Image 1 (cartoon, rainbow, N blue to C red):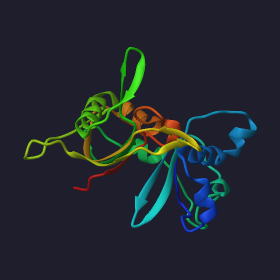
Image 2 (image 1 turned 90 degrees about the vertical axis):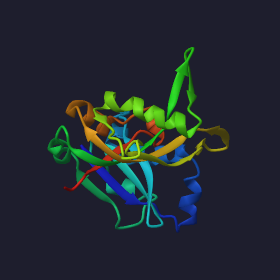
Image 3 (image 1 turned 180 degrees about the vertical axis):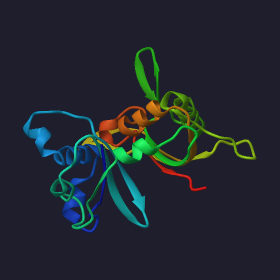
Length: 209
């Protein structure tokens, strides 16, 4: 497994014009794996867009190593970083506290149809309900609240020139690992729907004692 990152070249107007919808980011990620394209393989790669200190970054989690040249198609030269992820995954322990960030598409199903959760309360409850099945739990703060926050939410365009939007919600906080297999699966396969369009990636950093 690999985890990769590149700074998005927001100063290049031509590049940013291309990246006007989630479908364009999806195509960018797919083009980072030319060998899969050549072999007509369609592997699923987790990805998301993060913002840090005024800069935007593309993050990718993948079974295969991405091509740095593909990452730089819309990235800033010299900023592509590709790291082995497997060693980190193997070091995780049950009971370990982790700082986390999750960008997801909270939904529910009724009569065979899928609908987005709309309110903050609904979206937070969705995450609570996902915890056990994905090998983690939340603790409780002194005031009775959970150890996570909903930090942003929006409705980005899915396609170019088509009025289709999807719900994107970012959560951050602290969790405790309860099941290694389920937790590692969540880190490598994501949580929730619309993973092809930048949703579902969970990333964690151990809490230092």
